[in-house]
Image (tube, rainbow, N blue to C red):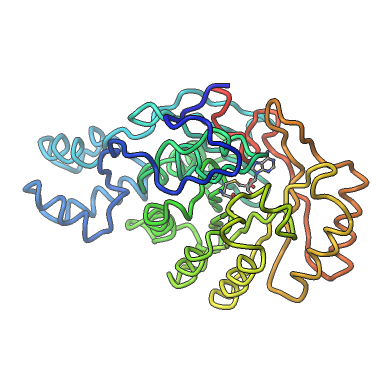
Length: 374
Ligand code: SAH
């Protein structure tokens, strides 16, 4: 297994918060607010209303190719195109399964870093799972990305472009089920979104702002998933963006969580849950608790019981994820009977719980498997 990391494989439990210094991706229209777009266009000697035209092309029609924007004068097309539409993502390969309704794309960024996004179309919604960092510094031992270390933060536009690419496939009728739209975006690809806070918030704003500012996806359809960076959860709660928060808990006790989610050595289970309840209170949004069921590691009934006691009567939902074993891992998914007992125990406490479907598993597209195999 090769990795995209320049930093090498982290030692067990080692956390990396600051990405190594690297050249930044070029500025793109999707990095900018409407006011910034107008200023950028004016700086290039064009009338500010050109920013509105470009925005309609990109966010409304999903067109990122200035050469085809024929309502702009040819000279402006060239100038604005090279200044605001650099190619940020280059597809390396796309793999599909579930009859073409699950599609994983491996992307190469301008500096060679690899990231992945996954499109999942269901009968009632289409979800894009996007990456927010190349690699990840959080080093969870069961996660393929965590093992590769952190290469760099992605820019707002690099994140948005993954969603736009999926939106284009849907709009163009390439995904079985007829032309459609992206209804949901989950930050569950590579990276710890709250460790790349500014770029991720910028991307969330671009996703939820109505066209032509942004893509006009409902904030309720956007989920930011975190290992539990407590101060950043507080910051997110204050943004006034009613996105769903998902907390990757994976263990209800500090002793085990210290090893499964190493950030727990900094912020304990109780602190993470307090931040989550505060988030729920301020946003009125149900918090999602992610729990990968790992055979004989975290799937005991007593742990389900402890989890149930910690979170009962809260605005919460538990998402159990059968572990998707990473290559060479000694861990595997729980036995079906243990999974069922875990669910029953949580239900006994009145906690809403679902077992996540494992779409994309056969294409290594399920959570945390991203890009490691290239
Ligand atoms: N860094 C963020 C988001 C990325 S991972 C976070 O940790 O929440 C999205 C989810 O997939 C997380 O809950 C993560 O713990 C989980 N995950 C990672 N590797 C997995 C694996 N091999 N099997 C099942 N779930 C996994």
